[in-house]
Amino acid sequence: MLKALLTVFVLARCMSFQKTTDIKCSACLMILRESEKLIQNEDPSKTLEVGSFRVDPHGNQVLKSINYARSEINVMEVTESICTKNLVYVLGEHPITKKRGYIPRTSLKSSAPEESQNNYSLSTQCHELLEDYSEEIVDYLRKKEGNEEVGKGFCYTEKNFCQEEDTVEYDENKEGVTVKEDKNEL
Image (cartoon, rainbow, N blue to C red; front, side, top):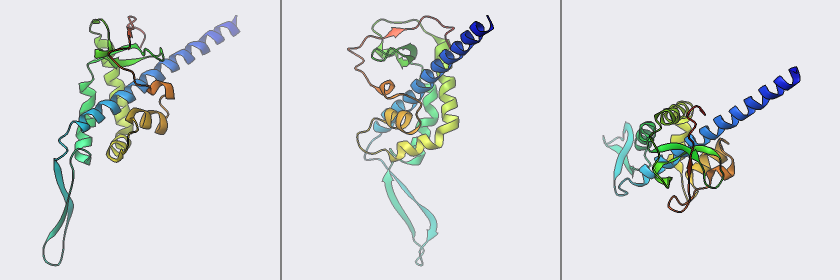
């Protein structure tokens, strides 16, 4: 009897850990992907003058012009505000991996009711991730080059919050998404 109870307890803890891992993964993907969208929407011609307070012997300050979109100040502002912009995400099932996580509301084939508890949980997970990893996220987004998908690059490759299949993006207009109804699942 004791072995059976212990087995049930261990299985419940493992399932709870998997749910937490899936939520952490989807929150990480949301932070990186939404931040990247906002950064890419910046005017590419917008620049920022940066330099030091040092002056040369002639009294001139050496300044250089950098792209504003990937500047530290812009990336920090984007990531700091991203957790309040996630209300369009709902708890659902990824159409390819069938894992639960947060998905964009636009991915839903039918309109789902507001799930404020789920949005609160995503907001909480978002804030926790940024509290623990904000410097690393900002550095990653600032240095991002090439075509590597940001969610996969950071959440899977660097931090191992996700499994590789969790980072698969899908066409929101073609794939169906199931919304989880159990609000006590979190």
